[in-house]
Length: 127
Ligand SMILES: Cc1cc2nc3c(=O)[nH]c(=O)nc-3n(C[C@H](O)[C@H](O)[C@H](O)COP(=O)(O)OP(=O)(O)OC[C@H]3O[C@@H](n4cnc5c(N)ncnc54)[C@H](O)[C@@H]3O)c2cc1C
Image (cartoon, rainbow, N blue to C red; front, side, top):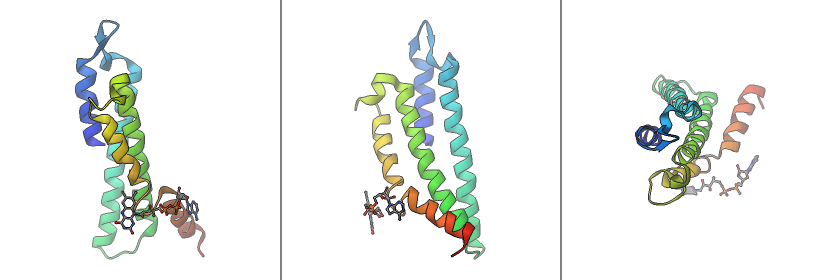
């Protein structure tokens, strides 16, 4: 996510449309801001899960929230990164298409995003 944001910020300052860098378009700014929000929120969730582990508190709710939110955020961020790069983002000439493929697997291995939600629901509902 951080790599995607760094690449997008650099590109948004350089690529011009309608006579201005695309970073001056508010809808592009919104995508950059959403990326930053996901990075900050994921960091906090991961740290909370790590803190629970360090303090020997079993917390499947927090760890599954961290895995699901982090993986889904990585995918959403990578998709936005391709969007910021436009047609260039879809090609292998630029780094973001690989970030999108790399992000996808996070939703699949080490417990899919669906399975994380099953764990969360089981924790909430018991059983
Ligand atoms: C690059 C890569 C590396 C991997 N490395 C390892 C490894 O080192 N060790 C290892 O053991 N495994 C590894 N795996 C396997 C990985 O853990 C599995 O792919 C993953 O657990 C999903 O299982 P599956 O592929 O059989 O999908 P399936 O279990 O067939 O799931 C297919 C879809 O159905 C959904 N689904 C399944 N069951 C439910 C349910 N009860 N409720 C709701 N939705 C459900 C899933 O979320 C998914 O969307 C790796 C996979 C990949 C892609």
